[in-house]
Structure formats: structure tokens, C-alpha cells
Image 1 (tube, each protein chain N blue to C red):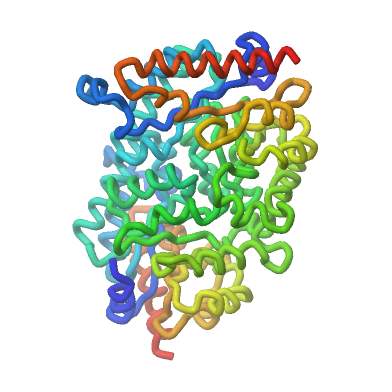
Image 2: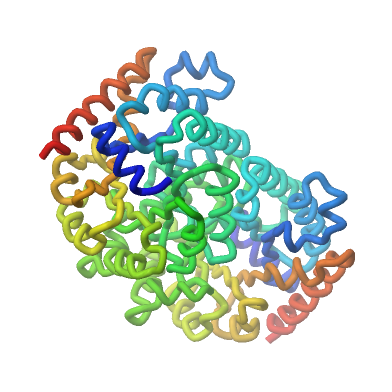
Length: 270
Length: 270
């Protein structure tokens, strides 16, 4: 997917929401578990069917599928194929946090961009740029590199010494050839750093998890992180998909997503 | 698997070799591709059948299976179940480079320790210690944290400023409760740092890739990295499994592995 198309979708849908799918058998409503042979898959498909008018991207957390072995992986494959077939306008991200030496990263790129039709994948940059390069060799596919994450553990290695590590990741990646195929993850829980990060990567898309349950505030993210084309994908997972755990789960999710989209529409008017 | 058992295996087999399985359809002998419905799986099973007398551990690179979608993942599942059923004395590592926020790492731990019966998994530590903790909650299972990797990209973030990042990873992880369930990855291409690393984590197992094709030298690794219980798992992948790409591939692999084991036996006598 071309980034210009994503910019257009933002204007068209008046939204920069990314729907996060972290399907958890302990939280999926019981009626679905009882009635479906593949509850993970069916829950996620119905979520996308209901939420797609309000979001421009979907982020699938691979861990929640891998937890169920090869059957879970099969559901992951069916889910991404369903979404890309029915909603080709959605930007579909594998939240897989992969990254290995070149020889192996090459295989992960094939896994997520060839065997599974994802548009993008999240990458953990510890191994350095040669672990990222293989993901940049696909046309209209993107590597979304972890810069500053939303969790407490971001204080362990990313933030010490005035954020030396995450700034080095941003600067080093942004200097790569094909850096136009790189996006970055910055948690909504760090609004003070988001402004600084936007100055380091003025033209890149930033994927922002951590709004909602994790405590990040949408208006703060927008004012610190938007560029002149918006350039943000703000993710909400649990706040939407577990808005209700009863029979009305899809309706409740829809209301939650619509409320976020309303807020985004107002921000976009400014 | 208890680490004392691994120490015993080293003495019994006179080896600290880890067999690395990175099965590549472009390198697997043609007769196998033609005769087998699941060439990745059958190639790897036969490798383990042939090499197990000379190694104490097996490291499976998940990228090479995921590259083939859910069918590849199914082969991965069957492979690890086969190895643990037939050779329970082998320490089986998922070289998967996972790591995510706690909620998701939890699912990856379930994926590799519950759904698949691995003994250990490699972890990329960028997200911090809360991404490692969920893997330490399983008895006799291990998180093998990337410290200093064998690739060129290790110079990007791990090595600058006198190795501040990789040393911080080692010190921070070693200070965790349950640090006895953590092992570390240190590439054989950094023998000068291995001695220093051994001083930081005197009692931990160190998994050392990069001997052979990547240029690391076994005797240097042993003299810099061994502790009084050896404490090393030295991996060889391509040097063994692609020793020949003809009909004699298993025999050639066996010879290669036996030569490495001979060298290890000599080092252990010192």
C-alpha cells in the first residue's frame, strides 16, 4: 500500500485509528466460544466487519495466535487473508516484533509479506540495521521499528542517558536508503518525547499504541506527534474489542470506535 | 530441563555442541524435496537422528518455518514434538527472537513452552525486563537473551560507547529475581568481549552462534567463555547441515559434527 493512499484514507474516513486485535479466549464472550469452532478467528473477523468504517488500519498481535500453536497460526493466516480480500483499503500490520540476522530476517519478511499478505510488520531493532534491511526490499510494504515503547520496561534500555538508545535507533534508521519504507512505534505514554521524535523523523508515519487502557491521551498525541499530513496511526486494542464482554460486544466496540473517530475528526479540523 | 542435567550431558557426551536447524528449501538436497511431502520436517528429523550422539542441544530457527505460512508452522510444531519425544535428553531451543510488552510476552511464553514443548527461547531485549519476566515463570524453561550478536549490525546499537547497551542488558538481567533462568547469546565473532561478558555473568550459560561459516574460532570461544562447569552451548548450523547438498548430506553432516565434537573433547580435557 502506498503511503499516499493512507493519507487519503485519513482524510476520507476522518480517522487515523488503528484497530488492535489481541484476541484473548479469557475475554471473548462465552456465546462465541460455545458457538464457534474458531472463536479467535470469528471474533476478529466480526470486529473488523463492525469497526472498519471508523479505522484506517488494523494491527494483529501475532502472540495471541501463536499461543495456540499451529492451529492458532492457521487462524492468523485466515484472518489476514480475509481482511485483505474484503477490505483492501485497510492497512494491515503484523504486530510481531520480529528481527534477526539478515539471513533469517529475510525469511521473516517472506513469512509476513509473501506467505501472509500483511502490509507492514513491527520490528525490534536490537540486532541493528542489517536485521531491518530485508523488510525494506518489498514494494509498498513497511517495517515499523520500535523506538520508544509504551511499557514500564522502556525505562530499562530505551530511556536512560536522555534516550540515547531510542534516538540512535531513529537517527540510524532514518539515514538508511529506503527509509521511506520505515515507520516507528512510539508509545502514547511518552507525550513529552513525541514532539522531539517528530523533529527527528518529520516525514515518517508513527504508530502510537498506549491510548486508552494504558493511559495515553489522544489530544496530547495529536498535538505533539502530527505532521502536516497527520502521519499518525493511533492504536486502540482492549478499549475497543473488550468494551463489553457480553452478547453486545460488537455493538459496544462500534460505539467505542465511533467515539474515538469523532474525537479524531475534531482534531483533524484544527 | 534442569541446568545440572545439561552439565552432566556435556561431560557424558564430551560435547557442548548445539545443532542449529535453519532448513532452506534452496539448499536441501533435491532427492528429499522430490521424495518428501514435508521436506523441511523430514530433513530436520533426519539431521537430528544422525547428529544427536555428538550434540547436547538443538536450536530451531523459527523464521525458516514461518516463511512457509501455517504449513511451515505446522512442520515446526511436529519437529519439536518429535525431538522431545525421541530425544528427551536434548535441550531444544526456539531461536525465535521474541519479546513484547508483558501481556503479549505472556502469550509467546505460552506458545513456546506450553503449545510447543521447547526448553528455551531466544529473546530480543529492546522492550526491557518486563518483556522477559513472563518467560521466567515456567519451571525448567529458559529465556536466552540477546546480549552481543554475531552480525555486522551488532555495531549499530550494541557495541557503541564501549558496549554500554549490551553490558547494561547483561547487568540488568543478571540482577533480576529468577536470573538463574536466563542464558545469554554472545556471537563467536566477538572473542575479545566474551571474557569480559563471562566476568559479568560468571554462572550463566552462554549460547554462542557464529562458529564456522561466520568466522568464529572454537578454541578462542572456549578459552574466553568457559566457566568451571563449561557453561557454553556452541552452535553450528550451516557448517553441519549443508556440509553436503547431495545424497550423502546426512553422512557429511555427521562427519562435520563428529569433527567438532572431537575438538570439544580435546578442549574439555584441558
